[in-house]
Amino acid sequence: AQSELRNKLELLERQPQRTDLRYEIGRILLEYGNPVEGASWLHSVLEMDPTHAQALAALAEIIALPLLRTGDAAGSLPAVRRSAPVY
Image 1 (cartoon, one colour):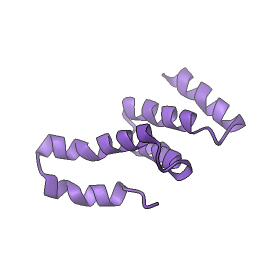
Image 2: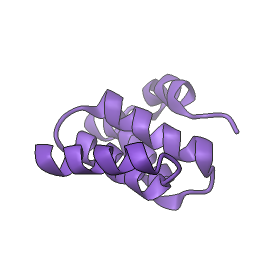
Image 3: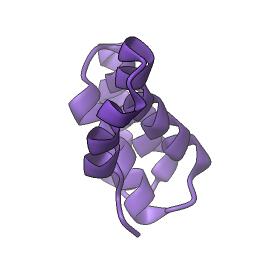
Image 4: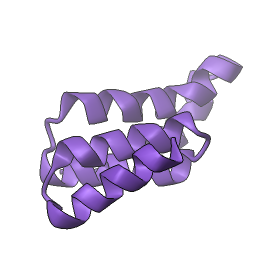
């Protein structure tokens, strides 16, 4: 996973506008236990393309995790508001 991440970061240095690479970097980071940095990469995708369905879905998963763990929709709302980008 580290070599895959490193390769994608190197590609992104040469082509910083590639939302597909930004999304993939975000997903890798999420999968390997870095949700804060992963979410940051996903937000960068949405800054470039607010309709990027995969990035929106991945962020929705992050937001839904506290709700799924606790069953507390009202308790999850502040987290949703903090993490939802405004476009």
